Length: 142
Image 1 (cartoon, rainbow, N blue to C red):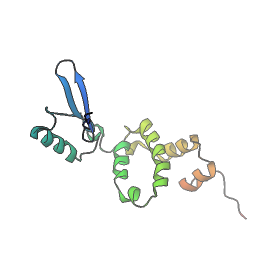
Image 2: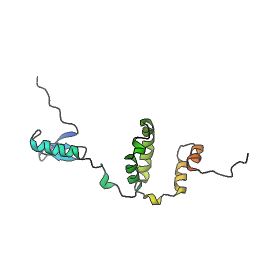
Image 3: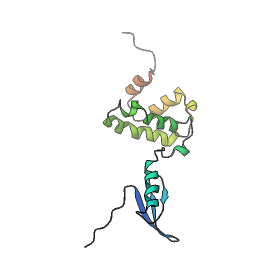
Image 4: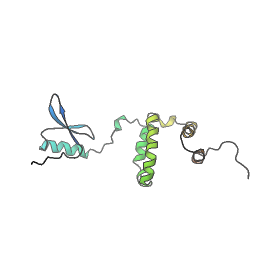
């Protein structure tokens, strides 16, 4: 009984009709040279593994909401100040906002838009008023 060889992490092998078996470093979509295990293969694999460029950076427009979220995710305010549970709860909310408005420039956002967006959300009105500082009507004089 022979042992099967496991591929290194993030390596995808597939069959191409024209070239036969191919290998791809799938995190960055980098094709790797054959044969697997050769010096050229390991040099290309280690170079792809060491590449720390941000995924999707070429698609992100500077000054957009998407770029602001990418920058926020890299800050210590996101990584160190928030607990993992808080990040787990907030990230889907931010990603939903990015999916709808990620291409908008930050300068296009107005306070009225943000208040209207939060009011359409499922957040209770008291939380929206407290976080935005928006009060409807006159405050009670007690």
